[in-house]
Length: 295
Image (cartoon, rainbow, N blue to C red; front, top):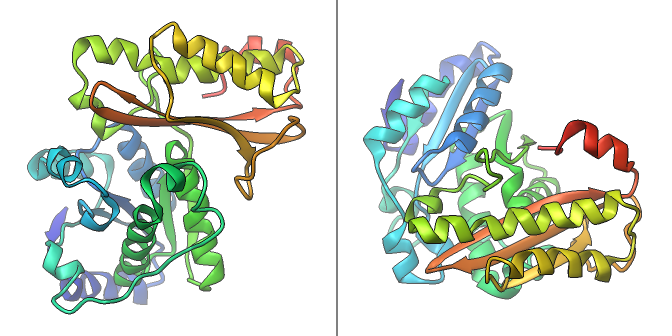
């Protein structure tokens, strides 16, 4: 695996595989790779002859300077893990390479960015995400880009970005990878104290409680939400938001009909975590019991 720092190097490295018609996969990351990222890289490897993993802690999507500062970084570790999972190129540009002096353009998606994370972190967060993702897609020109379902809203925003701007790339969203006890993998998990690591289970337990309510036949969104909140209070965690929304528009829903996204965010100690699940009105109770879970 090669580590490249500039757009010119990246484009030069991809010229030959592109000419040969080799599918190019891109896995955009902010580093501190975990099994969730590695699953994205393995999926990219299975589908694409050339796999690029970008590693860039994007300053424009952090509203809080302290959060940006605290974000874990370990490039040597990331490079070893990415190579092992099948990446051919690690693209690790500096901030000046991505945002050169005089940089003055923002790519903004509206509609699906305002609720949930947008309401909590502000639209600047998503403007930062959509601008950097547009740049990474233009830098690498991949055939397929891989994102995780854990960031469900981000994945929806990026799908809309790609569709609206006719970007020639397919977006693949890969299911959330979890610890054995249900905690969704996140680079931020390393910052949890042992006690907070236990309390962090509030998010996945809330989601499981909602799934159980729907599997038992509950279709009223308010009651499903109440079941999820009740499960979280056992851990003394008060979510920033816990909402049942449309999978397409993120508009709030009252009745579960078809597939619905249940998204949650909460602060556990000084670490902010997000998680989500898809609730389906078509899942029969016995089907859920048979699989144990759908992750």
